[in-house]
Every structure is written in C-alpha cells, then in structure tokens.
Image (cartoon, rainbow, N blue to C red; front, side):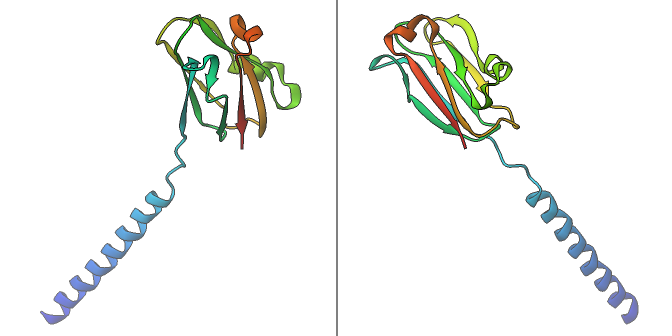
Length: 134
C-alpha cells in the first residue's frame, strides 16, 4: 500500500513539473505587443500635426485624428530607400472631416529611418510631419 501511495505522489510531482514547464513556454513565447501613437491633425497651434515627430517601431500603429481646420489627410513623400510603393501604401489620401480618425500601421518589415509626410491641402502652410522608425 505504501509503495502505491509513494508512486502516485511521485507521478503527481512529475505531472505538476511538466505543467509548470509547459505553461512557462506559453508565457515567454508571447509576441511583443505593438504600440499605438496618436497624432492630431490641425491642433491647438493651427495647421500642424501634433506631435510633429513620432518615434515608433516596425509594426506599430499611428492613429491620426482630425482636430481643427479640416479637411486633412496624410501623404508620405520621403521614405527610406525612396520606395514609392511603400510611401503610397502608408498614405491616406482621402480628405477627412472633423473628428474623423484613421490608422496607419508601419509594416513589420519596414526599414528603419525617417518617413516624412504632409497634409495635401495645407502643405503650403507648413503642415508637415515625420515618423521615425527605430
């Protein structure tokens, strides 16, 4: 009887150890979560992006919100490697009205560097911004 109880206790300990190890693998294998950064288009200072420069990682999302003096949009013109297709894919050329939002997600394979953008109707007024992918 003692040997059966001892065997069951031993198997229970092994089973618990296996569960703990398996559980820790799931916890450590969780992917890094992407961040979301908010940019106001047409802020309290007029025809500007607030903030004018944002620092992100590949995979992060930038949420643009129309503030004052709409309509606004975001057109990327200078990106690392002068990749016109990447600039076009990041751009949101549709003009958006007050309080509208849209998201732009930096591709996971995007090269590091500076990405310049502007608001098409207000570029002449200096409404420009920059994304720095780190």
